[in-house]
Image (cartoon, rainbow, N blue to C red; front, side, top):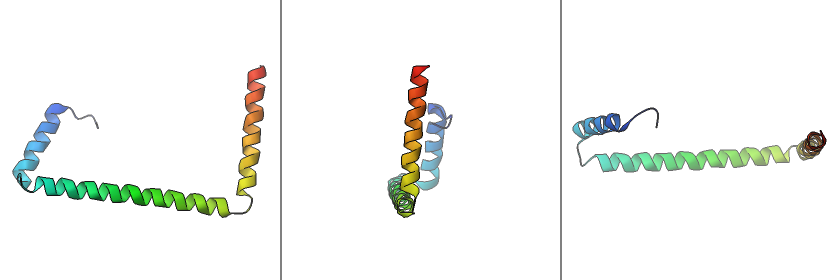
Length: 81
């Protein structure tokens, strides 16, 4: 995990306890977890909406089909070699 070993994580946790106190750490962790969950949800929404937008553009599906056919032909030619 980012090149951090157990001793480094223990030191970081100890410093966090000294700075924020034992009662505040669960609240900070909870807030961080909620923020990460919200961020992941929004990233998923953006990916889904961009995929829908790309699929709605004229010609995109046809280009994807042609690309798939070309890839199949390439695979067949590699197998026969």
